[in-house]
Length: 246
Ligand code: BTN
Image (cartoon, rainbow, N blue to C red; front, side, top):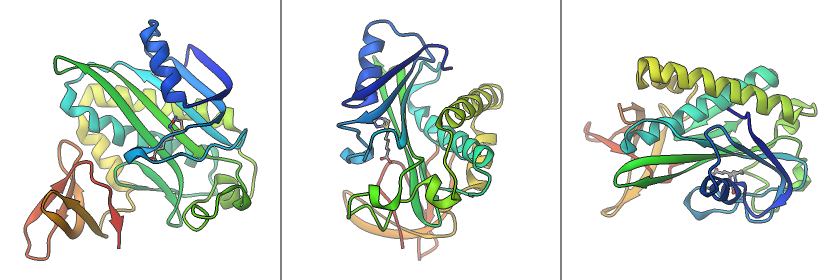
């Protein structure tokens, strides 16, 4: 991974650039990096704040040979890989994963992961794994509405983060975990994810077509869905809903 790197000063979104490169035949492992994004995007149509030179804004092309319905595994795998990389490079901080793949420090978000996949005839073609990490932002770099919810590795650790080292460590962790996943399936990834989850044991609110509901998060199922135990003792699994811990 990362043998083929494209660096830009400014792009709309590294996700868009990666998708364009794929159309032009970019191989697996192609990495797109930008110093700044003018239209960085997050899950659920949200904007990703991308000030110049202060964060990591990257998109990685992967072409895994797995059935389409198992792609949520790779979302969780990416969160575990990033968590391990951060703990290695910035040992002062101890991030926890909020389902499915946000990393939080003391309840505040420091990174987000966005997987965008393409399929043809139910066959997975490629996945663009987009990762945004708040490295060297100061609290004043955040717009007012993000301020109470966001932090950066520098704010939390008190030191400047070497972005190149963190990217290299993340790619190494991803390679290791992909190898583990191909050899042993989702089960060891699930164990690693659950061991660093902030969400487990917490009350999670979610909603579906029938309205809102809440339950206690108790674990992941084999497809990577979050299992909630409801007040009446029944279980319900959520897959992609936005969750709020309460
Ligand atoms: C989220 O938390 O909702 C996911 C955020 C993902 C942001 C990254 S930054 C690099 C890549 N390019 C984008 O436009 N988004 C992802």
